[in-house]
Image 1 (cartoon, rainbow, N blue to C red):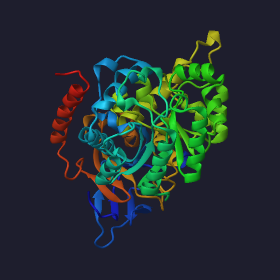
Image 2: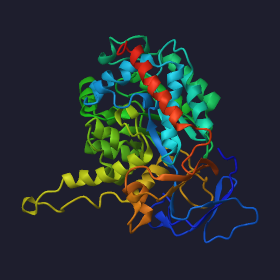
Image 3: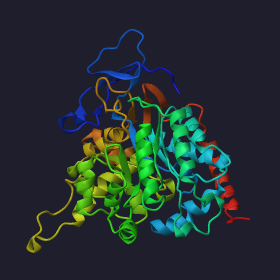
Image 4: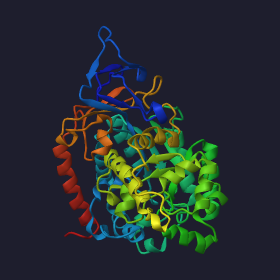
Length: 478
């Protein structure tokens, strides 16, 4: 990683800022970074001795902010038993079945793979909803997560998951599925907050209170206790919610409420809260989320892979819900990077609206949904939207005074040849653009598509061996 944090980025072909409206694009073509902050954008002259990055034939975006991940799943991609299962059965088939097979070495490797995959897509900030906790766990997974993120120079938010009760589907599983006691869970969150949490607007380390699910992972009284403890500690709150219709059935059957009503009853709505998924919502729930400023981590690829549906991002944003994007776990995604995720977000919002089109003779008002989400919308959701949800206010897009977290994409692959608007290329064209540079706080983390000191071929060999080891420990291989 290059330790310099002052640069002149020159001759960019296009710049998207992550800002709304007419501010979404600036002509540049140059960006000056001084001491890790954006100092100027425009037609700039080099200063004596100033380090430069040539962005000719490149486009510049704010670095992505991934607001929901499960990094340990980076060694569970394409697991056959869960590949064609919907959420509940997939949980039993893949992440729950393998979680006890992770040792310290395989966990660290999974984290490294996931963070490398994200960095090479232009992602600088990762919020990991880490729920692989159980009594007597033999290694400190939080320490490993922070160590691996720091080694790559990324900003890292640990959403400390866990459960104080189990679902029926977990009942026959081993020690690694046993729940924690609420006092132990809260004590560990307090410890982690004291050890790691930095409330600064450009923090590299944050802690979040994040029981795995609000409906299944704790009792209602314990859920309220987690909310009050989080607010006393001054940290944010995160969980899964309304990913499938099971959440509606569970909330009605157990509490005679909707999932969002239940969260409101137990103090789990507000501007300091965001939920992953929010696919299956009733109109009143959308209004409640918007009125309270509760955010979403939209995970379109995982929701598509598991057959959960497509969240109504247009309705949520119109109601006042802060929108961000998360890639979710690689075990329900297989391409856990932000370029793939934003490409899917762009397409699927349009497909969702188009699916609602009716013929005019039946009262239809429109033919298709191509106006549902622009590239600028998606970039805003995946960058400044994520920063807002996480409370990292200094990551406010490409604007003077903001932290210099930015991705420079080289458009030298045939998929980009013939484009009339180069600015849209990284999201619209799919695939992975070559990363000319990734800056995090002005420090160059990726240079010419390469992370210093990283041997990708060796990492791939380690991953293949680790998959065999996990299969052996899970009893799937002799």
